[in-house]
Length: 120
Image (cartoon, rainbow, N blue to C red):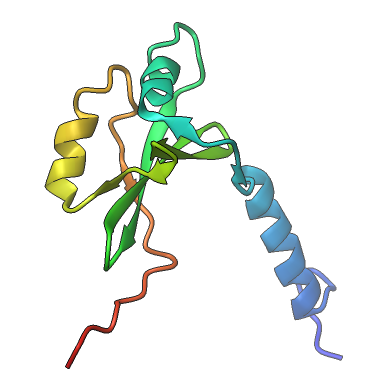
């Protein structure tokens, strides 16, 4: 049995302890109900409300899908029941610049990025 000499624990136990520690520091985000762009603006403009951060998810075929993170809840932003998408980062930045009190740090989450394969 392999144990850490300093902690008296196995590497698996140390890894579980470290993972738990970091999860407590940054809990997992949960998905909330979809917001319209109007609701995004209202959430950002609510006095003493929790700060809202824009999160963009890239999709090779559709551009960047807009989500709003408020606390640990992630909301898809929709228009007419469809995701709000931007063809370019510049278009997203231009549009989001008009959202009052939006967190100025905009996240691009490429964790699920896959390039679409087009015709050869």
